Amino acid sequence: MDFKQLFEYDKWANDRIFEALKKLPSSEEQKETERLFSHLLTAQRVWVNRIQEQPTPPEIWPDLSVKEMEKLLNENLELLWQLISKKDEVIQYQNSKGDSFQNSVQEILMHVVIHGQHHRAQIASLLRQSGVTPPVTDFIFFLRTLEN
Image (tube, rainbow, N blue to C red):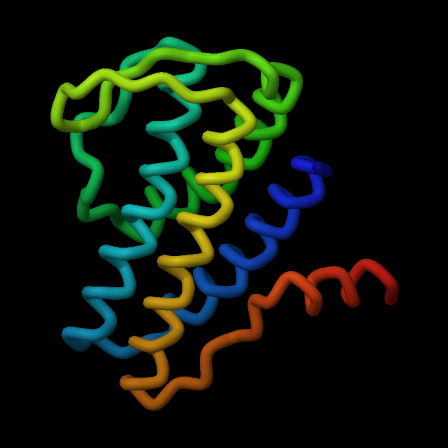
């Protein structure tokens, strides 16, 4: 599995969603898109920190400003890349409720990518409800950008 490529795709898709949500007029849908996107980015950081045995952000559903979202968006890719070399390690961690679990880093990294896609789909639906055509974020379209 090429995690570096998957994380490049994830960043590409997140960049496209971020640009779309910044253009939304103030509305309930706009607030919800920002909430979902803030969660997506914060959850990535939570998993990075768990793997690195660092304190995790205290709030998994924060209300981040556009600047705070952009900061996480730009930092997360490099942090995720650094974890690829640990993919075969198994870590123990606690979820946000304090329950203990263990998973391989590889399983967690795959979860991060799938989790991001799930929330981008929710955001795309909210964009449509707002009358905005969501950007294409399919993996195959990302691959096509690499060919050009």
